[in-house]
Image 1 (tube, rainbow, N blue to C red):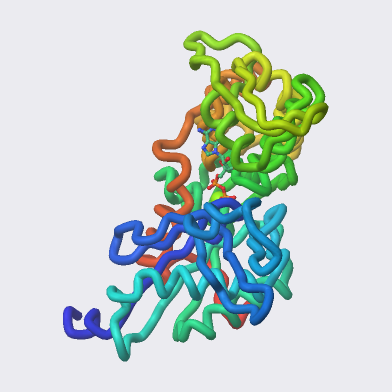
Image 2 (cartoon, rainbow, N blue to C red):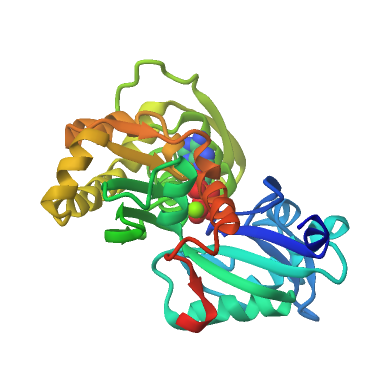
Length: 343
Ligand SMILES: Nc1ncnc2c1ncn2[C@@H]1O[C@H](COP(=O)(O)OP(=O)(O)O)[C@@H](O)[C@H]1O
Ligand SMILES: [Mg+2]
């Protein structure tokens, strides 16, 4: 077995709209924003991940930054493939030569058959000999440590960058799900709008995301309030850079409508849950994961709305990659993995 391992390299990949993670031998070896910077003149990749993110919204005419995944789907195939290749090259030194590459790639559940095929093709281009896909909610459930194969229902909400995916899982399958395009990116866009309306200040995506992380809140009143946050941007009246200070109350107001949409989708998912599984969920509660799970007060707000216990996954930005890693070790056993033959 040991001998065989020498020639097999196994990678788990979480291809998220906001972040891509790669796990190899049980360790996360890549954890980078899903973005690529391309030279417009020759189409070559300048950088991927963090380095490309630093260029985002600061580019000149020869450089463009692309987030290839949008709203839970692959919006730009070519860029996506270049990005994946770039990330796999990052683990370069660890990449064993002459190895049999085996991958499990996590995909958003809204992905079409054509897109699935495109992901398989991208895997071929990096020379994967054995590729499987796994749906995001399933990977998240595995990563949280739920017993997905049992005849017991569990409900997961994964709030990523592009989509919020809500799924009820039992017996190795997704029983019912809701996917909406209201998630982290939308909250960020709400904050940009709010800053324009309330403070006459233009800010970029990255600044808005920092506001969300530092003073984001799903509740208008929090038990432990984060300190106010200084925001720099461009004054819309004068055109001159300026700074304003923002409190969490304002962010709660800015994203309130979008949080309402997440609540609505959750209610819909619960309504369509078969009664026996609903009875299970009454006992087990709701599992919250994805970067959005880190939003202050969101667990409490969803719990107030549903009267159910809400659990935040441990390290929510990594539930999916952990689960994808578990799937990678059990490809022979898990019937919910998608192989090339089934698309
Ligand atoms: N502390 C935080 N509070 C609120 N949102 C956060 C926080 N940290 C990260 N996020 C958001 O989580 C999203 C990324 O989550 P992730 O699960 O990695 O998404 P994806 O799976 O789509 O790549 C981003 O929109 C990011 O702004
Ligand atoms: Mg994700």
